[in-house]
Image 1 (cartoon, rainbow, N blue to C red):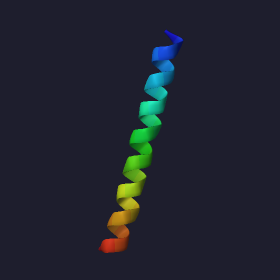
Image 2: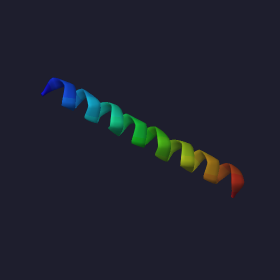
Image 3: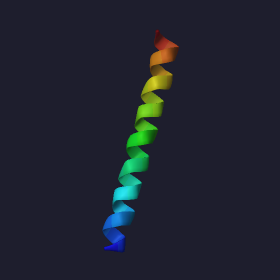
Image 4: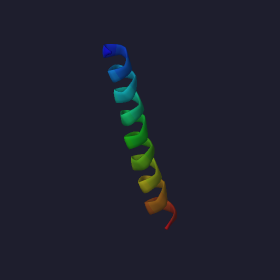
Length: 30
């Protein structure tokens, strides 16, 4: 149970980082 929660937390943080990266790249190229 804890391991699945930990995996989900890592996935969530990865998604948030990807969104932030995309927004930064979008601002640079726009």
